[in-house]
Structures are given as structure tokens and as C-alpha cells.
Length: 397
Image: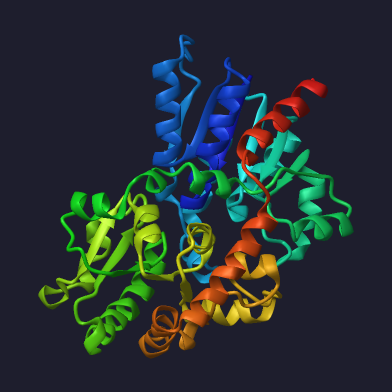
């Protein structure tokens, strides 16, 4: 069968890559054309190298997500022309390649436009990683019902929500469990990680500024000040601070915020999970990374700063109590969240010191992590979702 997958950001690339592995395993004749990133490209390349099948001109990357990854109401408005151009290009490519199914991964601003178009053209439409209608813009539920043939959800708290809305869905657990458990970071010792990156054998704190350029621009100044304040405290004077360079970003996105006096702050690319796993504690810019941090068992604090306009709009339409997936899963603050003005160097220093120095405080958080992991379900989610998708297609063929 011919699959057309659309992932518009780093987390979608991660989930898309694991889904592609499952599809290739369950459907050896699969041809996958996709919008995504480096991880999806790697899976496709590996399949091409190990399969005797020739995919012709159908399979492969159409466009990298870095060309359109934008988050925030104001940011989307400023880039509306570019986004609409990408939508037009995607529609043309779908018509030209005539897939058996279109699989949309999160990224609702773009993907709902494709869902409507594809449905009206008679294409089968699956939505994987449900748009967060439970957080805001609940009116999109009408679009899910109208344009999506099957919804595949990944969080346990979504089950009663979508049941109450009368939306048919399939739940097979959360694919991030597999992504973490099968991560190369789990098979490398801390000693080898430090040696491979020419790092001193000293404790370090992970800093994740986000995957989008706008997030990096707002978080890096705060993270830099946080690192300097921590180093000014005698017991942390030898600590290192590692910035996890986001996929599809380059050092040029970070270097404007770092000068010669910041030599203890290092940016490493392609090693986010290694950094999280080996850190003493982590400051994380929400998103999927905060849930990864839970699964790796690293104490964390979440910090998020959006544009002023985006924040003001969000205050009026976002209806959830927490911005972090881990906290939403247990419906309480398993770890602290500092948003907008509350996200400052002083607050981050205070919280990270608690995470490192207060064993009871740290232990309570790690206990909450166990609860979150158990609620997410066991291994094999990506493969199970792929099998469910293929079954849906065969049953209704």
C-alpha cells in the first residue's frame, strides 16, 4: 500500500519514524511518502537498504519540517503566506501521487487543512497523535468528525474525553515509551558519553530551549542567566551546562546568546536523549521533551516563554491546568512549571537546587514518574498502531 505521512515538527518526526518502522514491519510492500525530518528519513533509508523492494519515485521525503515549524498564534499569523504555500504544495503532491491513506501526525494548523481537502477528494484519512482539542479550540472536534476516518490517540486521559465527544478512536499506548526504552542513550554509559563529547567527569545540568527558533530566542537568555547564577554558588562552581541542540537547528541558532565567558555552556546536537539521561537535573521547554525526561528518570523543571501576544491569547482560550504532558497524565503537579514572567533565572535556580539538594523532594518527583510511566502503558505502541492502521485499511478496502 501507499502511505502518505505528514509530520510538521520534531516530536512528529520522532513519532513518525517509529510508526514507519511498524508499518514496514507489518507491510513489507509499503511505500511511504512523507513530510518529516531526519529521523523519518533515517528509517526510510534503512528500509531501502535492507529491502529487496524497489519503491520507484513514490517513496521518500517531500519536505523537511524545519521549513514550516511555527508555534504560537502571533507567529502563525506572521508566517501565514509561507504556511499556505506549503499547504498548496502538499495538496498538489497528494493528487499527483494518489496514496491509499494519508496519516496526519499532530500539527493541527496545517493538518486540518489537508484533512478537509483529502476527505473531499475521497482519500482515506487517519489522524495519529490527536490535536489537543482538550486544551483549546474544541470547535475542531467537528472537523475531526467530518474529515477523519480514524483517530489514533496516545494519552490515557484522552480516552474518556473523546468517548464523551462521540469520536471513534483507537488507543494502543504511548509510542514514547518505546522511543526511550530503545534509545541508544540507554545502552551507553555515562563515562562513554562524557568521553565521546570531550567533557569533564563532573555533574552537568541539561537545558532544553525548545525546537522552534522562536522558543530558542526567548529561552536562551533565561537559560544563560540561570547557568551563570548556578555557577556563582560555591557548590556548583564546577558544574557543566549542556544545551540540547534541537533537530534541524544549527549552532547559529544558539551562538548569538553565548560569548567567551560562557565556555561552561556547551551545545550538543543529535544527543538530546543522551543529555537528559545523564544529567543531574534538567530545565525543559515543555513539549514532548518533558515527557521524555520523565521516562528517563531525570528530575526536571519546565519553563516556557512565548511571545507576549501569543501568551495573552492563550490565557483566554487554553483551558487546561498544566502545560506539561506528564502533569496532565496524573492531573497534578508532578514537577513544577514556570510560564512566561514566572520563568526567570531566579525561579529556575531555586527549583533546580531543590531537585539536587533535597533528597526527599527529588524522591517524591521520581515516584510520580513511576506513576506516569505506568499510566502510559507498556511497550510496543508504535507497532500496534501500525498494525491497527493496516487492519483498518484492509477491512474497509
